[in-house]
Figure (tube, rainbow, N blue to C red):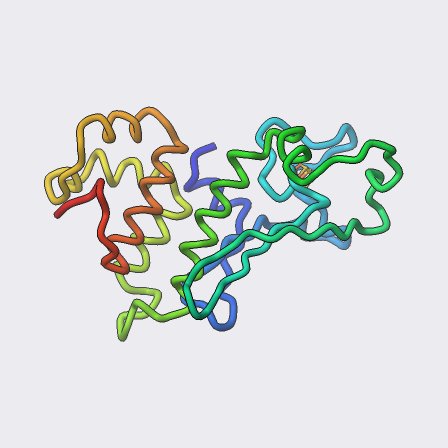
Length: 201
Ligand code: SF4
């Protein structure tokens, strides 16, 4: 399923109070159970590709932002709900060991990187054009619609407008992860004017 179709069929877009970039939330079943659309009687139907939150559960991550210095720090919470069967396990693991056990390291890192960018959007970068303007739509695409962003980078005049090293272009063409990291960097550069080593006009 490409990211356009995924966004259309499985995602709700919400704008939280006090923030200027929308979040995307997995759309739960439209019935009383409000269950995840990927759960079946046999369990998770997308288990090898399950999202970060599912890998990390019942640990939750947050970000502590120092208003004065601007530095941020990842903090972890462990508050398993009553239905969590893991509470009855004898095995004790640290947060890092649990992330490794669930192959969540890369997912955790990507979430943390995105969280750092999200904090920028506590200020409004859009001005009068608002969230329906072209800049906001392009940033949304870079953050959430990876297949459309790949087309944008490689099939529009993007590579004529921006100077990007050939080695980096090859990397982002070959890897979704590299493309997403590049999208994060491009949002910082394009929306906030934060200098980038990899992107030059
Ligand atoms: S592990 Fe996550 S994606 Fe899979 S069924 Fe459970 S909630 Fe859904």
